Length: 461
Ligand code: PEP
Ligand code: CO
Image (cartoon, rainbow, N blue to C red; front, side, top):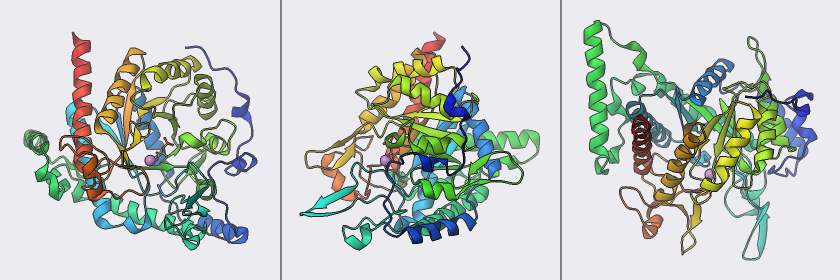
């Protein structure tokens, strides 16, 4: 690999507020600037959600995933809503992710890095600043962090106080996740605690139960042979992520810590930059450039290989292998043409990255009746192509990124239970993007394993 050329941007002064010198896309217009400043000052005094040690641990694990020694499973909500911050929703979402990770660990024999899209996923980019219905125009809904979804002037008015609520809801969510994953609930001796009521209805149930039984037998065997209980199986590591979209909020949690060097975003372990704000000249890349967290970058079909190489060098000037995760979301019909030149440009930049596939956001479509959906077969198709393309380019797909729910929602079609367009209205709950339901998500984990095994068998011949 050739050494990276010196990038002027990488040496420019950075501070948690230096993004303010750039154009920030997708930001709300707060009518009351004094109220905004007051809330931001309050946020700066509130406790963070995560620690720098956890962030550094994740960075090390991402470095291993980039090399194929770990596999990253990132999943959760397109958008969290304050009125969905309930025990059942949080626990079920966690259960699906735990079950998926168990299937992956067992199937591909690789440790899995679990990253939730939750505990902070409250801000959404929108295609237009305003929305018109029946001749009336109001600001677009930008996520609960900013305004309300109801189509009324009161709800749609950006309210800075919502940032305090977002912090509180993130803390409540993470508190339950931490409690569950640190105690008996996540204990691998008892994976039956992760069962979701309606698992009995899924065709995958048998296969999943066999995995659970096999793991329990193995644990019992090792404990018998060693004469000691495997205590380390009692807890499960879990990280959080969200789109670092609303920069004033992110800045308020971007802090120095006493015992570690660098400035950390302590609102989440793994912030990512969305496809709509990935402008190399823009405020979001400037913000991401200086924080010590691992950072994700979404890559959409419009991305040019040259520009991507430039952003990659800006975000990872020290060529740290755990620093940058590129999450492509190109669509099943375009990934074949678009991904190879992007991979080559990043390889030519000499900058190490971890690659992930988000097979959701490039495969969104409208049904004949105008319902936003995603087809299971397209999601799987993009994912399988992603594995093959990376392998063909001498690269490596280090993880997958899904929007999913632990509920029996009907938002995406297809999968083993054969949901079709007509079924969508039965339990369509998302106010933003369509999510895989519990059964579809678990099936996807099985299919990732199947794909990885096919690839291993093919390369062993
Ligand atoms: C998202 O992840 O919900 C999202 C908006 O994705 P993207 O930035 O890839 O469009
Ligand atoms: Co989404």
